[in-house]
Structure formats: C-alpha cells, structure tokens
Image (cartoon, rainbow, N blue to C red):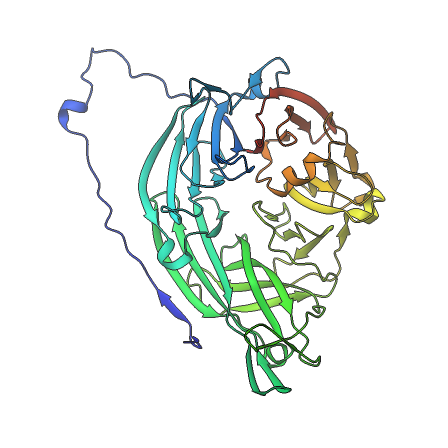
Length: 458
C-alpha cells in the first residue's frame, strides 16, 4: 500500500561496555607501555572476478601501505596474486560482490555495508593496522530491514554514515485502452542514520518523494538516491537523485500485460533531496536549471564541503558539471557553474570520480567522447583557467573507461592525492599528485589478474 505520511522509526541497540580489571593494569617498574603506532596507512582496495570470470562480481580485497611505499615506483602490490589456491597479499572484505568502502579521515578505520548476498545490508567496521592486518571492531549491524540487501551509503560527515534507498511505485493511471489518463509515478525513499564511532543505527525515515502536485502530474519519479552529505552546520542532509520523467501527454504503448507505458521525457533540472538533520524530517528538494544531468553518482562520493562552506556537487557519473549549493540558503547557487568540457576543451566529458582538496582545488577522473581511456585533471573551481590535464602511462587504454565506472575513492593526505589506476586485468600504478605544484608522479606498481582492477585509496 502506498505510504502518504512520513514514518520515523528509531532503532536502538544495547551497547555492551567492558572495563579493564586490575589485572590488566601495568604495575610500576614493569616497563613502559609500547608507543602507539603513528603510521598514516593508505588502504588500497581492488575488485576481483567471480568464478565465471565476471569482473567486479567476486568481491573486494584491501591492503594498507605507508605513504613512502605508496610513492615508491619500485614497490609492487598484487592484491590478486594466488598461490596454492589462496590469495597471497591483503585481506578480503566482507561482501559477496564489490564492497562499497568508506574510511575515517585519518585512515584508521574502514567502513563497509555488504552488497547483495545472504549478508547484504550488514555493516562492518575495520581497524587498519597496516599491510594485511585489518581487525574487525565494533558491532555488526544489519541495515537490510530499512535499506534492503543492496543499499547505497556514504560517510556523510566524519563519524556519521547515511544509508539511502529509493524505489518507484507502479505507474498510477485511470481509464481503459485507448483512453488512459496518467496520474503519477511516485517514489518511496528510505534513510538510515549510522553512528560510525559506536556502530549503531540511531534514526530511520521512510517517506514518499516530496514532489509538487504539478511535477507529480507531469510524470516525475526518482529511481535511485545516493551520495548523501551533511552541510557544514550539520543541520541539513543533501541527497543526490536519479530523476526520471514520463511524458503524460504522449500516447502510451501497451506492455505484454496490456498495461500502458508512457515514453520518457526531458527533466527540468538537476534535483537534490533535502531533509532536516538529525531528525530526518521535512523532506523537500532543490532544483538547478543550470543542468539536466542526474547527480546520484554510482559508487563514488561526488559532493564535498568546500573551504568556503558551500557544497560542491558533480553531475556524476554521466555529466561534466560541478554545481554549488549555497551554505546560507541551502539552495543551488545560480551564480556558480563549472563545466569540464568548457574548461579543458573536451567533448562529451563524464566525471567518473572526483575529490575536493581545498580552496577550490579538486582532482577529477573523467572519460570523454574525444578519445578512449580514462584521464586525470587537476581543476580550480574558482579560477577555471588554471585547470590542467595530468598525464599517466595508462590513460589511453580503453579498459579504463569501465574501470573508472566502478572507481570509489581518491586518497588525500594534506595536499597530496593518491590515485590507483589499472585497466581491467592489466598493470598500473598509484599516481601521486602534488595538488600545489601540479606535479604527478608514478608511485607503487599495481599488479592484477584477468577481470580484476583497483578501486580506490583511503
């Protein structure tokens, strides 16, 4: 039955705390405690094929290396090397298919919600101790009850995870053939708020997408929501949307069951769902008429809070634009518009992944209609003319187009960005970018097997 009211459900977990006994306390004279490891680990993730050889369907492996090793062109990493039937390096993260990994800003923890399978929807947290040492910590949470077994989720702010899911209802109509009257094609949205520090679900919400009566009658729907981010004040949650529109004025065709099917139509702008935080109430949406591309991305975060407090949002992974949501109005800023095609003189550019660095500087991974392959650009949102393309050894390989479609995260430590790039089944490297000097250097060598590729750095 269709839901017309907002349902807010709070799921509570009983957390068990243990304290150290007196036996665990070191007595004086027994030596000094070991120093805490201050190494900044960089976790590299990669996807391997299933038993049928289908790339990306086998799961995800991870390995943590130092900054020095990541930048060393003589260092070799092979997450997929198999000896005697077993993987040699790294660890397999829990997920029957490609894991969707997030990380704490300092790289000390990885977070993942398993994607599909019998454990689909289960949240896991790992402490990163270096190399193949990933220790599962905290509680295993099953989010499937609210988000299903294939949820979309992101670290929306440090320590805060947001899981989201959208599904469309059947098209509502009246009448009989050939006199059908279109009514609506509504969508249901589900949200779960995760405390990443204490591994707990602290709030949930379910509601129909808040279309106006006019847009509902015009055939609008949302088939997917993704890349949730909190504003700087943490009072509003912004969620990207894959918006679709049917054309109710057209004559529908009949499907095999005799039901009417209306053709698609153009949307009137990019839309972002907005709800209050942390209540998850009062859903509304904002629209930018500067773009008609969708902004739900795929497996990579595409919204970032800038140094100026505004949110910068890419129309990824099919568009070339970056838009701005004003920190004061919580609405799109019509005075700001960045287009990678215009800036780099490209045709049909598609932002596959990007990472905001600071002061308007960002690293972009993109493909375009001009040439096969996958490319890197260092962009300047405030001074677009300063944006430049950066060259890599693998950029012209056509296999990179599909690889970048799965890319998840560009690593960032200070001004240095880390981009693992491998065409599917081929060797590549971690490319190390100094975002101040605009220098790019080839770091650690990345080895693969057929159907495998590297996904991200954290």
